[in-house]
Amino acid sequence: MADEIRLSAQTRNEFGKGAARRIRRASMIPAVVYGHGEAPRHVTLPGHATMLAVKRENAVLTIDVEGEEVLALVKDVQREHRRREIEHVDLVLVRHGEKVEVEVAVHVEGEAAPETVVTVDHQTLLVEVDALRIPESVTVSVEGAEPGTQVLASQVALPDGATLVTDPEALVVNVSAARTAEDLDADLAEAESELGIERDESDADAEAGAAPATSDES
Image (tube, rainbow, N blue to C red):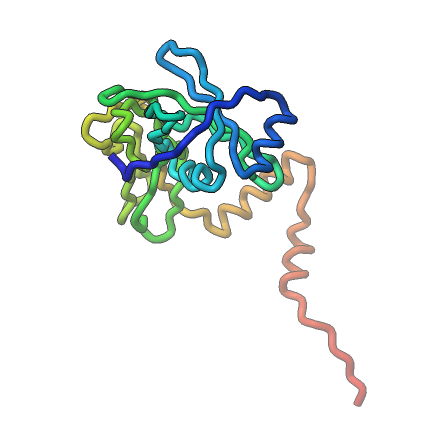
C-alpha cells in the first residue's frame, strides 16, 4: 500500500450552491462519501490537504469523520473550469481486502528504433485490484521496437493480484515507420486530387529551379 493519506472531515448539513461557496471561502471542500449500501455522508474536507491528496491517481484516504475512521477511494474530483480549483469530491467506501475496478495510467518507457513513431492508443487500462494496492501506473517498454510492433492489453505486465478488465485484444501501443517527405507529398497530392485541384507540374518545376532575378546597372 502507498503511504497512508489521512484527512479529518466534518459532517455538513448545508447544501446548495450558496452553502458550497461558503465552505470553499473557508478553505474547505464539500464532499460526499458513499458505498456498501450505506446512506451517503455529506462532509467537508480541509482544502489544502485534500488538494495534495487527490494529485495521486486513485488515492485511497483514511478519513476521520468526527471520530469514526473510514477508508475511501477518490472516485471523482469536480473542478472549476477556468481556475481548476476543486469544487467537490466524490469518495467511495472500501474495505481491507476488497477489490475495486479502477483506470490505471499507461506509462511508456524506452526509445524505439530510429525513424519510428510510437502511438499510445489506450492512455489507461481498466483493472480489478486490491483497493489498498492500486498501482500508480503500468509500464510498457518500447526500447528498440521496430516498425510494426504492437502491444495489446493482454501483453501489459500487471502487478501481482491485479486482473485486466479492458478487452485483452485492445491495442495499447503501436510502433510505426515515420512518415517521409515523399509520403507527405503523396498525401497532399491525393487530397488535392479529391478536391479537384490540379497541379501544374511544369510551373512548379520552373518555380523551383528559377534563378533569382538580377539587374545589370553597368
